Length: 91
Image 1 (spheres, rainbow, N blue to C red):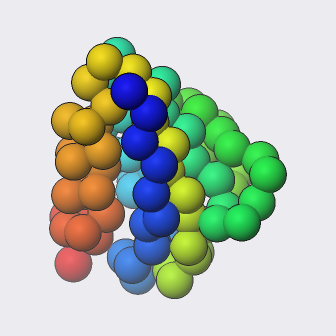
Image 2 (image 1 turned 180 degrees about the horizontal axis):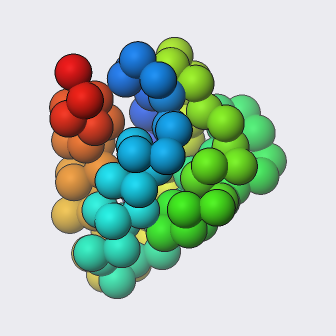
């Protein structure tokens, strides 16, 4: 199953080291392939790769596209969306 949705970075410092680590750890809990890219962009990075996430330089307010494909895609999306909604537990 493939799920794709738009997600906004709303934590104060964007996807810095701590937030990126939390995202990678969350994505790694699932068997599904998880990719993240800039909304409207062509390039996506593996959300299970800290270097990939950090290379995006996604700041607060950035619109991203989350693509998840695999057997547990819905559960992965729920967990990742919850992490973004909780602002990575930083605020």
